[in-house]
Length: 301
Image (cartoon, rainbow, N blue to C red; front, side):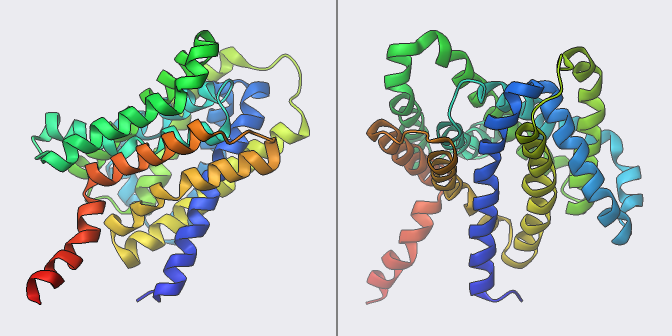
């Protein structure tokens, strides 16, 4: 069993890595273009994960389920990656990382309509609070540069909707597939899906070394290595605690954007971030679970 301190450190490390992914997208996407940039990301991640898959002898699992994995990869990887790449052409890394936190809310809504999962009062309030947070987050930008910000914002929300759809599909149809085989297959099939489109968007000149380094870091560190850490957390802590990384990513996204890209952190961003995270906590039941032991203790006394 993983020691608690080690698990906490790995959880923070994973949040720092995934928070940095928005920084790398912000640097590399304008020069490569969103589609080619994300195609390279999934291809590099595939090359990193494939040897691990054979080392763990899970390649037969991938071969048996490639059709299901391909469909899931469209919503878990290919489509949302491109939408994020497009959004970071205009939105800051910090703002994009905060909007990414709406994923669990979309997952809850889709589970309600698709699989008839129950939404309690707390979840419904959480959805309203969370989307109000999106409005607060983007309020000052939409009021001054609506034509430049509206479509990228909708693109991020479209990406998180895809993540929510992909999460439900994975849970109900891909749950029996081993995580490493699923991750590797997702990156490979997403690459195959994106390549035909990427060929139409080749850059006219060779991207800069900064952009090349960004896509390498995004593929190896933020996708390949991050998946390995995430699998360790799932195996040792369980999926419910592992996905709590969602709450830490915006903090690192804001921090890296401020440190390396000189992005401003305004009061609107902080307030919007708090509302979104509060909404996610209410929707997913994390807040009620936190207070439940305290409530039970009072009843016992």
